[in-house]
Length: 166
Length: 291
Image 1 (spheres, rainbow over the protein chains, first blue to last red):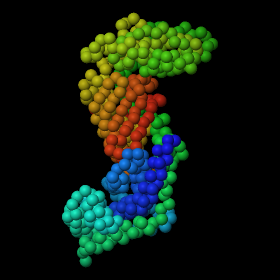
Image 2: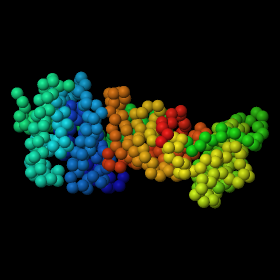
Image 3: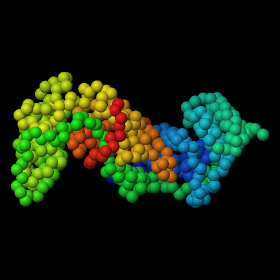
Image 4: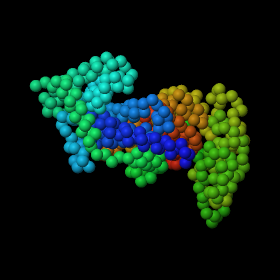
């Protein structure tokens, strides 16, 4: 094994440990199902590892994994409305929370930029300038995405609450 | 009471915290191990399915022509020494002459007369046909005549048949279909728009495919790779889709049909994994509509 392979593995380990929770959280915020979120996050990391020699040199590798993860989630939710957690969740996974499921659906239905702004700012607690930097837009744009996204999400959450969910 | 936008922020934060507090004992080593399993499939059920797919395999062929069903017009088949054990002629079309000799030797057959034929389909030195053809039964030790490409001597501009001077042409020589890249599109299902990995199922397929290049040795196109995760079962599974480049290569015969026997895909956007398969037999499912 060339030395660079070990080095790649080590740097991936660091990256993984630092990114695991934020990415899982992101997946949960837009799936509402911790198991699905874990599956997809794992898949996103796998794809990152496959391309790690290139991705590790990116300015923001996590942005790349995030994008992969987001694509996985979107394509999954398009083909099946994200499935409810099956009985017998392993570990300490909390039972699916109806509100979370509905909110996740509301977030998924937002335009992508609004969804990501909310996930990064409201969810992950990044500041507006941090989100703006990550998404490569001015601060003002992030603020407007946030407020429009929240308003739309609130409406669709109300709509699903009034129909008792789907 | 309508939900206030601020409440969304609160709820989203709550979701984030919920997820961050979940214990998840996923280690980077697990990711790398999973990758190895995928690349070198072993005990992973999904991987087994893939291997099964490759075995059960359908490849991807394209029907360049239907070989005249072993119409061995010349009765040159060997005089079978009675009592000698029978062997089946292996497929050697598409192999270099020397490789063909080795393959025949393994099957306890000798190389008989070797004749040169022009071919626009095979490069120089590659076996174009054998006499008798693959699948025929011969007595062990019998000889098989080979026709080896001497390259195109006539410009392939016109759809010149690739067959030879009529010298040793037998019924099993290459049929005189024009090279496929001169076939009109919308032709007889030669260029598949959908290719399945695996038998009868559509759990792993590429389509729709558009071909940018289609020659006698390779075909190159692009399309969408669709993979069913089969969770919880294939019937209710979810397809992941990603764009890929598709390459067909390794032309030759499978069960008497001339096809590309190897397919390889390469994801083009950083999403998805490469996949490849080589056909070992031909099943009844061609899996493509005529284009």
